[in-house]
Image 1 (cartoon, rainbow, N blue to C red):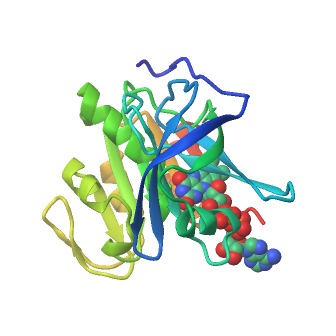
Image 2 (image 1 turned 45 degrees about the horizontal axis):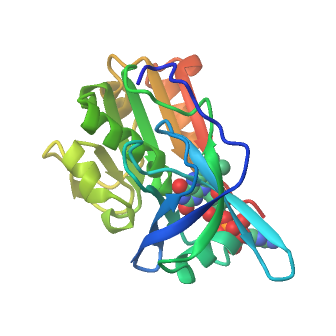
Length: 241
Ligand SMILES: Cc1cc2nc3c(=O)[nH]c(=O)nc-3n(C[C@H](O)[C@H](O)[C@H](O)COP(=O)(O)OP(=O)(O)OC[C@H]3O[C@@H](n4cnc5c(N)ncnc54)[C@H](O)[C@@H]3O)c2cc1C
C-alpha cells in the first residue's frame, strides 16, 4: 500500500452483521461486523453507523476502523459517553446477530498507507484509527515507519493498551505514574513537547486524534517540538449534539 493509496469512499448504505461484541467495563465496547459489499479500507478511515427508530427517526455517527484491511471483519471500538445517543445504544444494546446500517469506508486525508515515516498522537478513544495503522504496519513489516503516542488518564482507561505496549507505543498517563514501553518510569503528566521532539525525530508526517481540547493541545506541543504544521493531519472526535 503506497502513501498516496487509492482511497475508496463509499457513498451508499450497506448492512453490517454483528459477529462479535465485547464490552470492556462501563466505558468501551468492541464490535466486529461482517459487511455486505465491503470495499477495502485504508488505515485511518471510518464508517458511519446509522440507527433507525421504529417511528423513522434516525441518528448517525462516525466510528474509525480499528481493523487491518486484511481482516475479514471490520472492528469498531466505541466509547460510551454519558447520555450519548448512539454510543450508549452500541454499548448497552447491540448483540451478536444484530444488523446495523453502515456507510464506509470514508476519509481521504487522515489515512496512512505504510510508506511515510509518521508519528501518531492519540488521546483516549482517538487511538482507534492508529490501531488499524499499527495492525497494518505489523502485517506488512512497516512497523519501523510508525511511532505511536497514546495519552489517557490511567492505564485501565486506554483501549488496546496491551497491543499498544507490545508495539512499543509511548504511553503518557496524566493521573498515574507508569513504567512505559521503554522501561522508564514516567511521572503522571500531559505529553511534554520535549518528549514529542524526541519521538518525532525523522518523521515526515504527524497524525493527531482525540477530543477538541486534546488535538489543540497536541497541535501546540508539536509546534513547540519543532514539527511543521503543514505535515500535521488532525481528526477530532467531538460531541455531535
Ligand atoms: C471521523 C470520526 C471518527 C470517530 N471515531 C470514533 C471512534 O472510533 N470511537 C468513538 O468512541 N468515537 C468516535 N467518534 C465520535 C463519534 O462519532 C460520536 O461523536 C460519539 O460516539 C458520541 O456520539 P453519541 O451519539 O453517543 O453522543 P451524542 O448524543 O452526540 O452526545 C455527545 C455528548 O454530548 C452530550 N450532550 C448531548 N446533548 C447535550 C446537550 N444538549 N447538552 C449538553 N450535553 C449534551 C452527551 O451527554 C454526550 O456526552 C468519531 C468521530 C469522528 C468525527
